[in-house]
Figure (tube, rainbow, N blue to C red):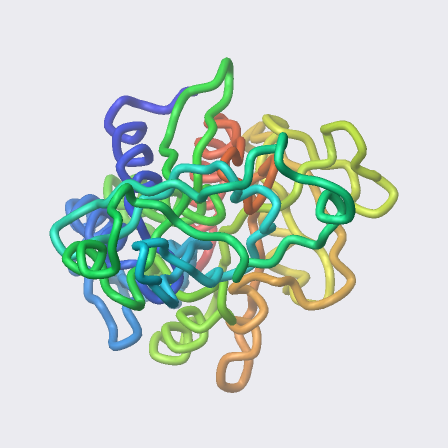
Length: 345
């Protein structure tokens, strides 16, 4: 079962929206407009989470996929028009030099580049010098502070300037962590709208995950679900240099990943596993002997506690501009979660 053209177009639009943590509005708008076609209501809470609801009198199930991504924020503009920035979320500084960036300007998207001294001019100890964010700059092709401030402000946010593309049998893009999860939540709501489950389902595109799981904390507190599923991405171990003894065996295209550990409710894990096996849906298991670094962490501890599980999409090259996922893994994750929800009563 492949991904249909409507879903593929939605995924591409979602990936290409500029939405660093705390500034997710563009992606939230895309998600809300699409998901709203299948749900009785989609609301935006004070923090910015988009919450879609399928009404019913059964138990409340919350699905959370965070829609924010890592990014950049403008800190200072010098007299020559060069822009200095700080990271939003966990960014490796060594992947930024020489990249194009998109800034969310006053009148729309502004293209810039992160400049770098040519290799010919780097000498001596400078070759081994540790790279710092404050030593990098963005060049938007304007030669003065005044000209730059006509199009952007201090506090303007941006992302590396790449979008979504098919790559052989997979897909490459910026921000699959975790717009892939937000996509799956919307897909599940689409599937469930055709045949309503007994449960009341709350699909949430959560915000500010990359800076402290903040959106999931407030949305789960407000919803107070009986059951909760976080849908995120996880590291693959199927590329050179990665140690399966540390990561486990996680492969691209081999199905969604079910987390197992103290953050996970045993009954929900068992029901997810059973659902996958009954429906011939491929799945993988990841052992996480600590709280996961995902929305599942705070959802589990909401109020007096929530039965929580984590379903992940295998993701190569996480937190780089070239994250790779399998579209088939997305389809299988949506099918697994939908069939799982039909089992809840």
